[in-house]
Image 1 (cartoon, helix red, strand yellow):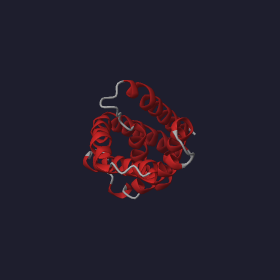
Image 2 (cartoon, helix red, strand yellow):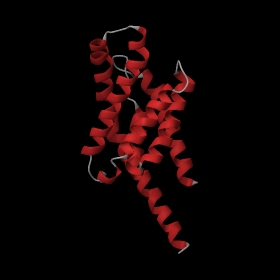
Image 3 (cartoon, helix red, strand yellow):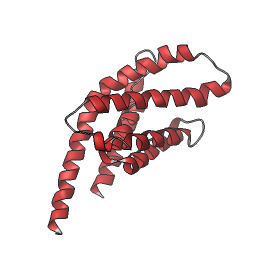
Image 4 (cartoon, one colour):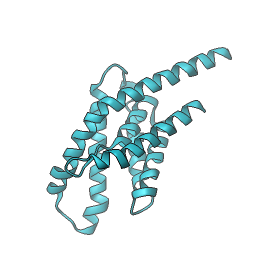
Length: 172
């Protein structure tokens, strides 16, 4: 129960930061995608199932408050969390290379999916404009923020795992 409440608080805080604080400080009309960082991080730290659930929660928040269609972002985030869960066996907490690569791929995948569903279907074919003015600046900002947020999530995850291990040892 403690883990669920903590993860819910992390998601809500990142959602609020992403949609309020970073929108007001956005440079070149883009802001970092903190929810991709949270979804991908929990995906490769905790596995496919938890990554998928957290992705569903993050996507539903975006869909409810800012989405044109209910479920599109939820589906995209859910796939991001699920696919990052495949890398749980390769995850080492002290290594930053794999998380940075996976979060970069996740952010680009999210932006390609958004382009596909929101612009390509409406016959807006200015892909290179979208790539240079939205995708790449957002990727850079997301990776810069990933360095801070990833370590916070990692410390919280380690602390929760320690508490869960101590709690489980009491019952053995």
